[in-house]
Amino acid sequence: MRLGEVRLEYLTRAGRLERLEGLLPLRDSLVGLEPFGIGLPTSGPVSSVEAGLRLSAAEPGLRFVRLAVELGGINLRDRFLANGFQSWSETRLLGPDDRLPGVRLLGFLRPYGDYNWVDYDGRPGRLHSHWLTYTVDGGGPAPGRTAASESGRGVTFLGSLNEANAYTVFRADYRAGRLWAEIDVEGWEPSPGDVLAHLFWAEAPAGEGHPLPSAVGHGPQPTADNLLLALVRAYTARLAEVTRNELGRGAPDWATGTLVPRLPHRPGGWNSWYNYYTRVTAKDILSEAETLRSTGLPLDFVQIDDGWQAAVGDWLELSPRFAGATHAGGPASPATRAPTAIKGPVTNQVMKDLASAIHYKGFEPGLWVAPFVAVRQSEAHARGWTRPWKAGWNPGWGSSIYPLDLSRPEVTDYVRQVGEAIYEWGFGLVKADFLYAAALRPWGGRTRAQRMREAVRLLREVAPGRLLACRAPLASAAGLCDYNRLGADTAPTWESKLLSFCRYRERVSNLGALRTVLGRWFMNGTLFVLDPDVFILGKSRLTPAQRRTLYEVTTTVGGMQSFSDSVAGLDPEARTFLARTFPLPPLEVRVVSEERPDLFAVRVGSPAPSGTPTPANVLRVNLSPRTQGGLAPHDAHWG
Image (tube, rainbow, N blue to C red; front, side):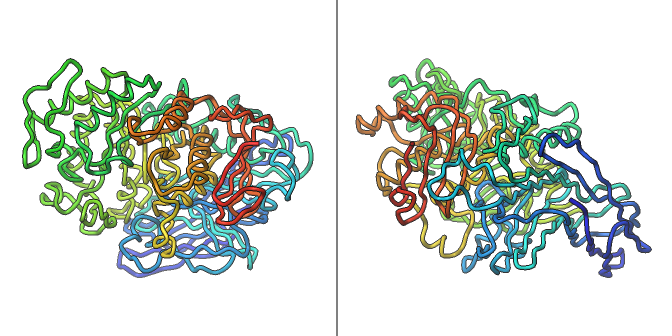
């Protein structure tokens, strides 16, 4: 990899737009750019290089607008990973004839993704990927071949090591044979020595029988059928070094060469969302926890989702539905149902009682929170603690969503108070949602990425126990969360026809969610512990095949697993199936290959979680609405 032509636009102190372009090093009267590079040792067939761009000079008062760097010497192979911006953004391998159009019609959806600051032109072969990407020869094994035999495909990997400062968007234009990086420097007020870009490139060429080295002593040894995993491990080990330097003494104790915590097993649990949504009550939680205890399911956690709070943004006040919670030994202190929100000491006692009751029944208590947003009905919004721009609209809340103004000390103090309260209440798992809102716009001389990273670092500082990130810009959460949702919400229906028509990449959709977790499989155990969201065994509008596919993919690819079904309402067959699922067995996904569009082969290193005899240990998945590869529409089978 080599850095080619650079194009920088910036505003002077007087507000005049200036452009600097050409080959490095570059200099005008106000700003200077210089390259840096790190040659990494070549081991076997794997080659890797780092290259970057820093400021050699910058006059005070400048503000950057945009930066692009052409990338030369990179093999733009047959397919390109289009990695989405945040947890929910659909991620797929695409090729020269594929399009990546932006959202249309429903403008209130734009803040959820990258639509307001990344150009979608929708032309064939014009693709983009956030943070990292890879290009690979072919679309997968040829018909009749297994993923294990596909050893003749080369892989080229690209990733950024500078996402704490500026988001990197890798762009491909197949028609022009061009690959470049756009660095989101908008709003940055720079200083000499600032690193603007730091890129990692690694490649394993096509060929039979390459003995690939393991980047770290962790997981299955790379072979010719999982070239990508070898490259990802090399990148992750390097990113872990960079992140440890960034965080200093605050760096977590990750597993060697990764950014993931040391876990004794794949955790499993129950959450309230898909059964109760925002109508959940304390009584519901206690009833479900007691049923789970009585069935003897070996779960790790019971997590209360959205609906417990008085309003989104008011996390120290309870919904009246949470009055009268019960602690481990019997009735709580008298907190009767009230027509209005529960505040003050009563909130603390109710939540302590509830967490204690869950813990008493043998589970880690978990709690959902959206720490960086508020709705217009909230006291947080009424106090003027929000930014004037919108982070979307949520029909379940009947309101637009507004990001908190984290530049204000009283607001960050409030976020700390919320974290301290959750810790005092006794909740050891925090699911933090709608995190993207902290990255909507650059402000105060800082980029989107810098603001987002600061916000997640604050969250990590105040969040007790384990942190599950959701709707988070992936790069900003790396190294700072214990688990990360790496796909959209699953659902009791297969697909949202309206939101699919609107080309909304962050839609609630089983099709979109499963495409994305299969597209991001290599992140599990390296960059994150992958949360694939729930499977559904109870009532839904899913066909038996769709239900089976949702179950098999999530329990196979995920690093953790939850469900929301009421066990008491399941039929005996579903309850037996559930009992066979937990505890989740140790499972290593060695490679996921897309043989043709929406037809996947998932090769694992352990028996299937459902206990099905699987000599080949290959899960074959057809997400297409038509029969292909011997699989019915939306079906999955082992073998």
